[in-house]
Length: 148
Image 1: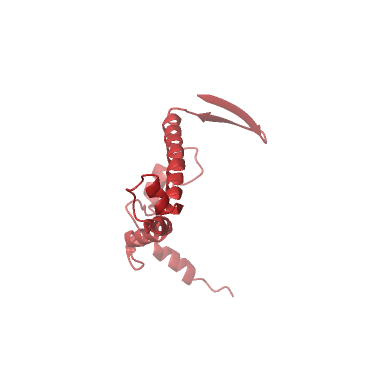
Image 2: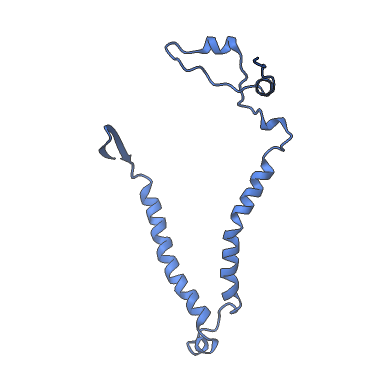
């Protein structure tokens, strides 16, 4: 574990890094880098070298040259389709706009004066959080008193 102390505008903070997970990630990145480079060179060689030259080098078993255009095209299209698919999945998993689930969920807590005052911690000036009822908000917005 590495402790680094730094002082910034009078605030001292400690940076700690545990190296237990780094070797696994570093080795995966290292292997991916060294596999991508020769595979990329092999792809470029296969895509641009004519078939006569490949046959002269006794390379006779290779995919059709039409895939040289289709592989990058489908890769780019696949990467570009990730955000719309993700947005569609979020849209389908969210409740509809007319549903009451957009206002309350399983973690919602309604205002209750007895519960809030009894659970208030001693010495704390910050009250507990709760969800406001929509009727309270609508009444406060629409029922303004006329001052005259």
